[in-house]
Structure formats: C-alpha cells, structure tokens
Image (cartoon, rainbow, N blue to C red):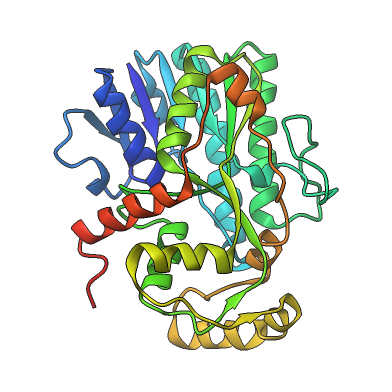
Length: 325
C-alpha cells in the first residue's frame, strides 16, 4: 500500500496515475479538492497533515508514504501558513509514519532548501542547506528536511528528493508554475524580466521519486533537475508551441525591483496574486547550475527535453478548457 499526501496537487496527480499504471495499491489523502483523482481506481481518505490522528489512521497498513503536501510561497504575506504546513505538517507526517510502522517515507523537498551561494558553482547534493537570510519558503523547506533527517537518526527509513521548477500535464488547480504558463499564453505580462530557472517535467520528477523509493539509499538526498532556461527563452518556446506572441520587452532586474511597490499596491487593490514579488525575483537570480548526476547514476534519472514538456502541458490545458478566453 502506498499513501500519498498532497495527492490533489500537480505532482500528486501525476504520481497517483503512475502508481496506478504500475498496478500499485494507492491511498490518496484528500483535504479539500479531489479533482486530481476523480475517476481513478484508488482509495481516498479524508485527512489533514495538521491533524496528527488523521495521518496515523491514513497511514495504517501503508508500506510507503509520499509526503507531497506543502505550501509554495513567493510572498511574505503567507509566511505563517508556509511555516505551519511545510514544517509542522512534515513533523506530523514523520511522527505518524513512525507510529504506523511505515516501511519508507519519500519526502518531497525543493531545490530551494539548498543554499544559493556561491552562485557560480554547480549545486549538487553536497551543497549546504539555505541559511537564515534565505526567503521564508526556502527556510521552511530547510526546517522540514531537518525534521526528516532527525527521524532517520531515530530509525525511520526515509529519503529526500529535491525537484526544481515543475511543469507539465495533469495540473488541475493549476500550480504556481502552471499559472505562469497560462499567464504567458493569455498575454497577461506586458514585459518579461531577466533571469531564469531550472525547469523540469513533472513526469520525470515522479519517475525519479519512484526510483528513489525502490533504489534510493536511506537518509540520502537526490536532486531532480531539468534544463536551465531564461524567462525570455522559455516565453519564446511557449510562443513556438502555442503561436501566442511573447512579450518583446525584457526588463532588467533593477527596473523590476523598482516596480515592486506598484505591483504590490495593484495586487492588493485587485485582490489578486502579484505578477511577481521580491522572493520570485530572488529565485530567478539563483540556483542556475544544478547537477542531477547522482540521481542519474543511482536512479537512472533522465529528464526529457523541455519542448516536449511544454507541448504536453499546453495540450492538457487545452483539453481542460484553460486556454479559452
């Protein structure tokens, strides 16, 4: 039996489908939204990673638990929620795994848990964790990793996977990165910004995590990265795939920072998520050189071309009606 927390999210939706394709017995922890696994032949149970007793009940009889539930934050506005879900939620999952006698926990962390310094050197699994000056979300992922590793010292068999920026199909909510792709398609951006990130296909991340479940070494971390691409170059690929014209103006970072107060005021007035934040600009300037050699060597991890990812993502968005309007 495999239990998946955060099954309603982007990674969760792809994970439960891949587990089902492999004829694995799956139990999905459902908090509020069950669209991601409607029609699938899997077991669903109500639960909340902030409710310890519901987790113990959900994990009963489980051989493996995938801890995907998390709160992605690009703003200080929801810092408390990120800390609560990412840190206390992980502690509750770890404790419930130990109480329920789970054979192995696969914990989904993030590349943001690792320090971005020095910026000009390759990041691999030996990179130290991010420090106290890192953004709130990064620090919450650091604290969650420490909780998992402390549990390993106490006897829990667990491994950690650290994906980069995840794109791809079956993005029901959609995710933060999915909304970014849709904003490019609908031409919500009047300009782009310099900088970029490492983008990876959700299906490759899931395959890497499944391989880690079976072959990963206890207490080890595996970076699941893809391809670094600047935001303008990513937008150009989206234009090639969709035919929707990308913005032609690219703002420098200093200009983007100057615009932050206006972006924040506008988003508050409109009660919408800001187009970008100080934290998201920080992200686009860091974590450029990321190595997945360890995952390739030990897990046979091999990310696909980004163009294939974008084609499949937009094809899926089209079938779901996200490209209308």
